[in-house]
Image (cartoon, rainbow, N blue to C red; front, side, top):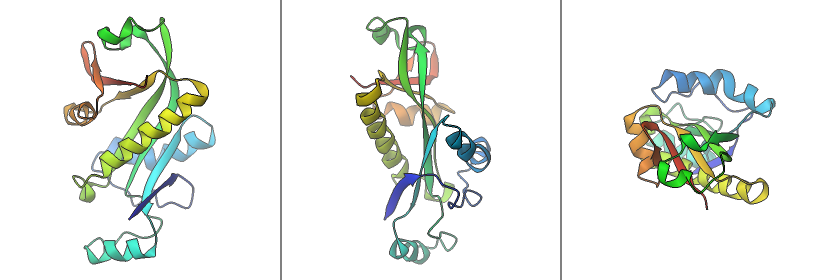
Length: 173
């Protein structure tokens, strides 16, 4: 029912609302600029085809069109110091390690709780894993926005980093 693709100018960024203004602002104002500069890559969930758009309309989501973004996430290459990692993992690594940073992940507020976030996270992890096979990355690092977001990531194996429970790490190897 959805398709995940790289953000382009044809996507309706202005119609997205996840209920968290900094995430909305980032998608609407910054994501495409960062992508064009090679800083990050943003992947968006959109209706798969016109049949999917019709299904959304029948379910009461009349504002969803073929270019509507219903969720997104962003990935970037990064480095972290081992001091930022969970202590039990830090000893495996040199002082500074390459990681993939999951910078943002959000779904439309009226579609939350239906598994889209889980799908977006699975796609992000798979893309990060494939990229790590080509360029090297020890894992995925995320800064959760709040305790609820941190619990979401922890359900999928992310570990809190020391005394900073909103910083989480998922080793790839």
